[in-house]
Length: 311
Image (cartoon, rainbow, N blue to C red):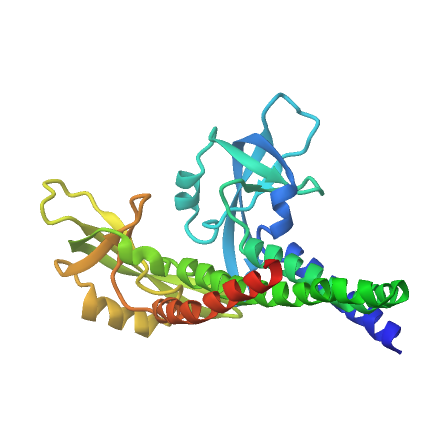
C-alpha cells in the first residue's frame, strides 16, 4: 500500500509540475525554445474569447530572417494585442525586426523580452519536488544503511535530516520571494510604479468608447488624453490605468464627468517607456506592502533552516 501511495503521489506531483511549466502565455518552458530574429510582415485581426467575453485581437504575423521561405509565417503573441488595431500596428509596425522564441509546433512565437509569468514558480516547484522525492525514498536509503551496521546509521543520520531542513529553507525563502515578485509586478501599472516620476497633467479630452463584450452586452472604455501644462503645442498623450478594463457605460460616463472633464488637472506618473498612468490607490498596492513584513518573518527562518542543512 505504501508503494502504491508513493506512486500515486508521484503521478499527481508530475501532473502539477508539467502544468506549471506548460500554462501561461508564454509558458515557463518557452525559455528553452528555439530563438531567432523575425520581421513583422502583416497583421491579422480576429475575434477571440478571453474568458470574459468576445474581444478583437490584432496579432503581428512575422517571418523568420535568413530567407527561409519554406517556413510558414508565425503568429506573434504579444501582451498588447487586444484593443485598438491602429495602436497595435503602431507598436509592432511592418518591417520591425524582433527577437522571438518559437514554439515546437512552429505556428506561434513570443517576443524574447516577454517574461513567462510562471517562470519563478516553476523553478521553485522543481526544487521542492526534488527534495520531496529524496524524502519519499529516504526509507530505502535507511534500510541500506542499517544493513551496513550501526556505524553507517549514525554516520548517515545527519544526511537523512538535511533534506528536510533544506526543504524548509526552500519553502520559507522561495514562497515570500515568489509572492513578492508576483505582487510587485502584477497589474498595469504594477505596484513598483511608486518609484516612477510624477507630475501634474491637464486633461485635453475624455471620451467614452463603447465596446462589444459579447452575448449582446455593450460596455465602455474611458479614453483620456492629457498634456503637460507647460507645453506650447496642442499635442497630447493617452492616460492609462484609469480602470482595469472595460466598465459599464453609466460608470464610464460618471467617471468622465466627475474626474476627467477637459481642463481638469490630474496627477500622473511616467513609466520608463514613456507611458503616463493616473496616480490612484489599488488593492494590488496593498498586497505588495503586506508581503514585506511576511518576508521579514519567513526569510530568516528559511536561512536558519539552510544553515542546519549545510552546517
